Image (cartoon, rainbow, N blue to C red):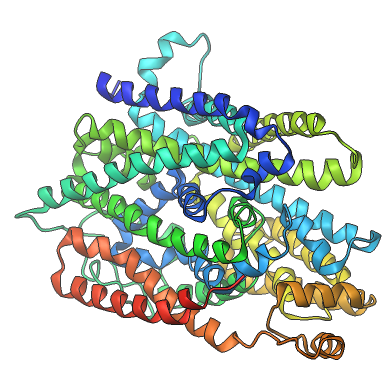
Length: 612
């Protein structure tokens, strides 16, 4: 057993508090559907922002990012653009308020505000539900595997096996751990709903804040008088056509990892990420926990504040932990046990995703280890519970209530939420057994599946002629291609994304022009309520004919300016704690100066101009 009794006590106290929160808040969650799924739209924006940030601070993603930082150094700050992380900036500047103005419960329900609610819209509605559930199952399996890897190092199977009445293959040990702690997350999120999730996330964030700052300080202390043994270019966030990192004389397996990742032609890789990322950000949030938090805010103005707050409370804290553990691992690499069974079952491989738990075990003292272990365990539980809540919303609100029982009582709705939550968890556990590693499922989600989502969800905001038929065929073509491509074109999904995107665009355009435009009254209501900019001139003229005082949204230029400087600020928030821990004085001062200037500008161009 790697944990001391002090650490174990902290963990048990946290687990007990989560179960208690779920039980205490169960009555509040049962009040109605909106209270269960969205906290009654009464929670303040900063709590929802903390909760959203907590959902993004997951074990699997953090393990992946520590591995990236170890191998790619400062250049690793760009690789999370695969998500893309800067979609939060687009949301902050304008998309969150557009989405919140709909007053919908889910992304699928939102479609009724854009395309109407007749039978022609049902197909597009179903396509969003299918996509949302695929994404939720993918993220749940992704978190499940990451948690198992994390737990395996802290609690070696050799100390548990004597008490287990059956044999478990070493390759499936992480899955057993994943099942155990998934049950805790399931209980408090299914019983307590959104209220329970948000309060649980707040407690977890406070714990993580203390632990992450402590890890950063420990790393600074260990680094005093030592130099990191890393390749040339590791400390430089900027890059050229090629990655330019050669680990062969230091850690040969790191070069194998770079080759396996497919990131070596870094200039091309970066351009692909940026190209995909901009379109993905223009499409708005995917139908997951992020969208649910936006729809749960009190107003469009608070939705914008909430998404802006996420980057501020997430990035500096998370990267303090990432760079801190990276420094400790680099200084003491040969003390770490990173071996894992090969996916083929033959021999062992170096698993860099194990750096995070291995470094914690070796170098973090008792007490702080318990806080960090608890915080990261809570990170899994918050991501899992937020994603589970989104899956429940889509199944219950967009399938059960819409198609099965439109007159369902509040009691029936809550019971269905319980049943759906349990079913989703069981299916995600089953899927987790087929996942190779964290990176493989991550690449499929962000590189393939989301490629099928982008085109249809981009057109819906900016082009008046786009209709439900185009939405359905764009989504159907994109999702089908995303599911088939891995079998036809093996390799990194990102490099196949342009073809996937073109297939989805073709489905959108063909579907749109083979059906009549959306009902004019629906379009006028959407345009006046959501107030988007884009290609809406015909609808704008109709609205102004009826209401000459109506002013169209003329903020395109300002919104795009804010997006650009917002992305720069987000990069500064990411790299600032890295420069601080490594004590790179000149880059640190430049970063602080840039961030200060951007904050002053955004106070005038964004904060002071927020609107409902």
